[in-house]
Amino acid sequence: EPVAYILGSKEFYGRSFHVDGRVLVPRPETEHLVDEAISLLRATPSPRVAEVGTGSGCIAISIASEIPGAQVFAVDISAEALEVARLNKRRLAAEADITFFEGDLCAPLKERGPFDAIVSNPPYVSTEEMGALPRDVVGFEPESALHSGADPVAVHRRLIAEGLPLLHPHGHLIMEVGDGGAQRLAEEVKIRAVPDLAGVERIVVVSP
Image: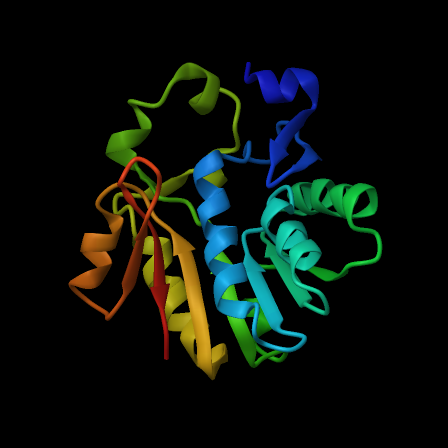
C-alpha cells in the first residue's frame, strides 16, 4: 500500500494534501505543471483557469493559492475524487475561488469559457505499460486516473479537441505527458515541451 495512503497525506507544492484510495497520489513531476501555469498566468489579472481531472485537487488548489484573484473551475468524472478535492479545499484554501464539477473531460466547461488556461494531468499509462507498474501503484491507485487505453496520448488528443475552442485567443492548454508523449503529440499539433528535472519532456503547452 502506498505510504501516502497509510499516512493519509502527501506533500505537494508546499502543502500537505489529504489522499486516500479515491485519488491518485500527487507526484513531484506534476509540480512542473503548476510551475508552467503560474509562469504563463502571473501577468494576467484575475485569470480564469480550468483543471480537467482534478483528483485530490492539488493542482487547482495550488494554482488558486499562488495566483491572487484566480478563478478556478475543477472537473472530475469521479464523484468520490471530488469529495477528496472539496475536503482539501476546505482544509487548505477555504477562501480560494474554486468551483468543482462532476463530468467527463471538458463537458462541464462548455458554457463556462473562455479560459486563460486549461490544465490537466490526464491518464497516460498505456495498456502495455500498466503491466509494468509497481504493485503499490497498480494494486491501490484508481485505474481510471492512470490507464489511457492502448494509446498513451488518447486522452490528450480529446483534451486538445475539446479544450482549444474554450480558450481565449491568448490562452494555453497545459498537460502532463509520459515519456515519449510530447513527441507523439508534436507529430499532430504544434506544441511547446517543458522537461522535468530528469530531462523528460513532461509538460506540453498547446495554444489556439
